[in-house]
Amino acid sequence: MTPAQTIQEITDLSPAAFLLVLARISPLFILAPLFSAGTIPGRVKGIIAVALALGMAPVAMAGTVAPTDPVALLELMLKEIVVGTAFAFALACVLAGFQAVGALLDIQIGFAFGAQLDPMTGTQGAVLGKLYALVGVAILVAINGDAVIISGLARTYDLVPLLEFPDLRAMVSGTFSAFAGILVAALQVGAPVLLTLLLTDAAFAMVSRVVPQMNVFAVGFPAKVIVGMLMIVVTLPFAAGWFGDRLTSSVAAALQTLKVAG
Image (tube, rainbow, N blue to C red; front, side, top):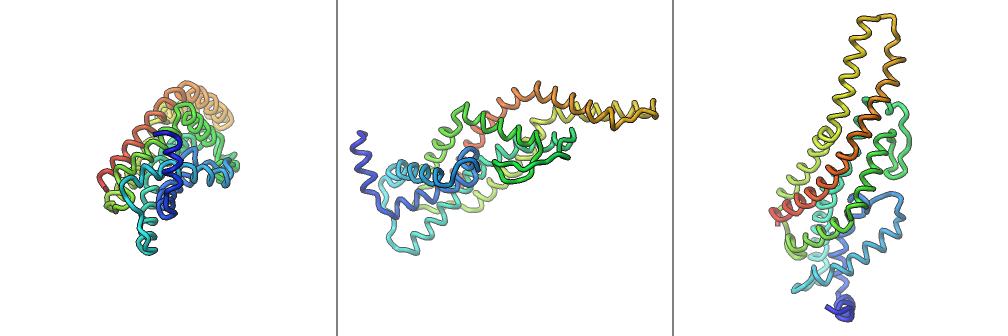
């Protein structure tokens, strides 16, 4: 298809068709990692969303005509928002699981005492939680995660066409499965560090029995920080590879859920 033909298809789009496509894309900029970053101005997000909608609309509307009835159009827009939200939420759970690793380690090491405002999420967070969140975003950029997410979103139009209604029960079930995977993912990635910290606590507990005069808290806290940071340095490269694989599998799982629902 030549650029002139593409421009012609975009100019021939009806406002209803554009709104339907935009309704599915918009949740991406509220929930999905990278696209929903608080550091991106809302105006920029809006421009990107409109550009994506204009680019995907000719493909999404191929062979179909958007309804002109306002009630039918509103129903379809609500359905599109639900579909887009289900897809974006499954992806958000990947970054949330990775960030949960840092939150667990913050509690175990003791960094949670110094929680600060995270400008990316607007919530309180400690050092390692923010570190893992930033690492997750960096990995997304490094593996072209934005292209993976956009291509996955484009495939949803093959699984759940614009004018068809999916099985909401299957979508809800898939969404809950993605949410349940957050803690599981956090435990999988953080298990080596958490186990090492647990053994460190056990070692200091035995030392306190043998040498009751020693101030275990004064010695144990910096020791846990050193041990924890060393283990993070060792395991973080493996966690980065896990995150990239998890993103790809989450896109596939989200598409499979929409396929079943469609």
